Image 1: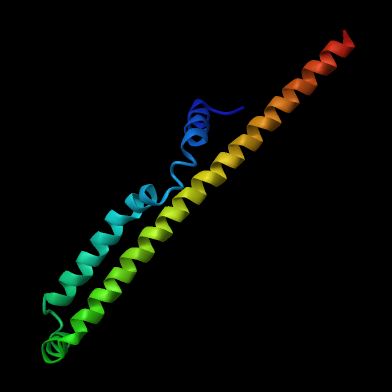
Image 2 (image 1 turned 45 degrees about the horizontal axis):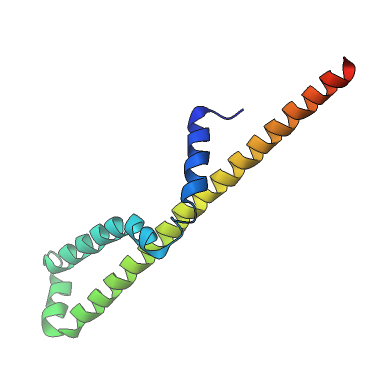
Length: 119
């Protein structure tokens, strides 16, 4: 038997599963976390607490371009990975609930058929 919360999720995900698979809705899931991580790395890099890295940055200005490209790559990866992971996790839970629901319906139906045959 499914709980009311599981039934609500089942109804919600059956309606939203194709909508949530679209690219733009996926981007909004992981983008805040990835952006926060990139800003933290950039602040750490530009703060100058590590003098040797700061000296390398000042002597070779192309290092900042490499760091920015790496941060963009990190943001893209985290955004896409977290979106796929969340969608896949919800989809797995949905299929699990559907299986449990179908199994419960079949067992109830079999019991009711046996009762009707015994009477």
